[in-house]
Picture 1 (tube, rainbow, N blue to C red):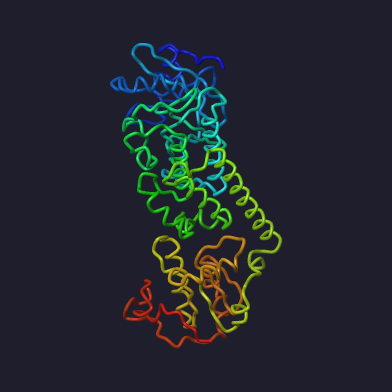
Picture 2 (picture 1 turned 135 degrees about the vertical axis):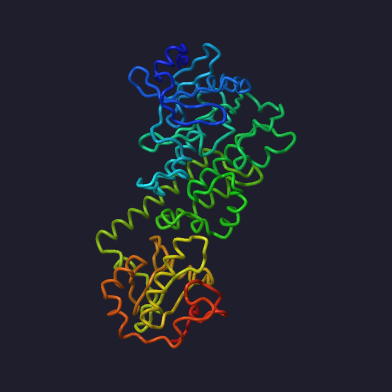
Length: 446
């Protein structure tokens, strides 16, 4: 590879129109938009008073000079003239992964599950390249996080910010003690990094990647004790319950389980039990394949037959209940949107005074498997309504039928409830335990 170009300060000022357009700023410096030879670039200008960062400036230049990979940010050049420390990179028009997860712009579409996994696969592939040593030295990034993952116009991921990265040429990594500032960012730091005699290891990057994959799916910041909670979710097989609605409703079960297992292994406390990045890439490719295949199957079946005809797994015990209204819902408040939708459907049904068999997935785990089997392999959201053994739909379908008067027709011949419409405990406006509220009871009147 040719050495990076050394720009004069005048060239940098010209390229940025005297640092006119700011792309982002942080504690250590500011990034500006520039144009060099008709090509947009990102220009990072380190604060003059941050002399302690000057060694990391040179380190980043040295490391990026040796890298040539689609998932590693490309170094265009640098400038150290006039006491300045400036690095010029390729421009990434879609900002950072952090921007898309936590600073989403109103009116723009959310990333799909497939896009999230594809981004993480790009990150994993980039780390695999760094860890392989095929380009020159083995490189440990040491500060992988959502803010350091940049996205181009096609949402392809590139790893950036190599200021804390370390290398080795041959043999084990240096046993030199790592300072606190060199360990990385809290929330992404592997447990062994806090040990007194910690030695650099590729497995610390694997741990950080596990956090990135987890927060990419859950949209919960890595530094918010995410891993502490996540292990409990994963052990219970409930990862999808802690993802946003727009992720959960399109996150197919087989892919969920594959991602759960991969995240769990990446976050292993014992670094020797963590997979290599090569293994991570292989497993993530398999998970992505499952997501794509299920998405294709669902799309094809829906286009050909319609969603209601696709649900052919309705058990006989449910389909035979021609006089029954069955509502699958949740009383959990962890996903506010789902709880509000469930409450809206319950209140709509209440106006008709009919007996409703309420199946609460939060209070009764057996209903989780029941509804999963009904919708398999597709993903479902709550609530879901069945009338007379036939599938009706979720909150949108119920709302439309209610407004049009069709819901009244579907319910008119069904038995009336034999319990009061409202109760003193909650007036049917919130979920409480069954012992307190008749309106929230699960009725088994066959």
